[in-house]
Length: 191
Image 1 (cartoon, rainbow, N blue to C red):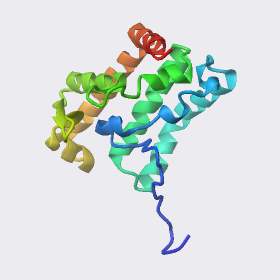
Image 2 (tube, helix red, strand yellow):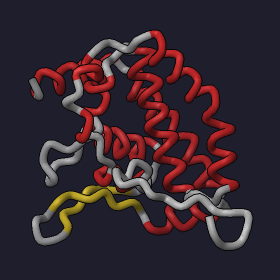
Image 3 (cartoon, rainbow, N blue to C red):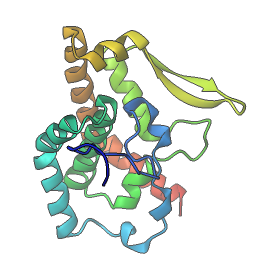
Image 4 (cartoon, rainbow, N blue to C red):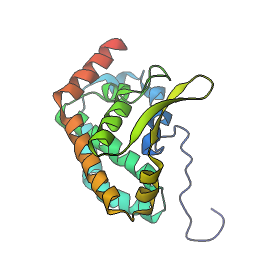
């Protein structure tokens, strides 16, 4: 480590695991989808680890804030931890089934998780939509620029209310039996 102290965290995440919450299409989970152990139901150790991650999330977010990780990436961590919590602790889904709902099968079609984020945005009155972009017209998720600015600055009270509504809506979506059914359907699709 060189340079001034204290050192800052530098992202060397080649899988782009913590992209901005509106860029979940950038997250990559397919490298380990073929591993046989991720097809198994959650082990007691996995359940314990997920519980620990959920319990420690507030402290983790405080530390990431201190290390100046972007708020957008912190939201991604919150979204994915909430999904992991509901998928493992509520639905007892294997990690592979969870990940299948987090990856695109076609770059032009949002994955299940992206659709849930879009639905939570609608329920929280956060203006957003999928729009085609680039040479191949892959769909990207665009969130209202004014919301992102207010959110990043943390100054707008309506942005804080929207945040609470957003995560409440996501929790309801992730907790639903429909989420479990979608995971099982995705697993059958990828057999």
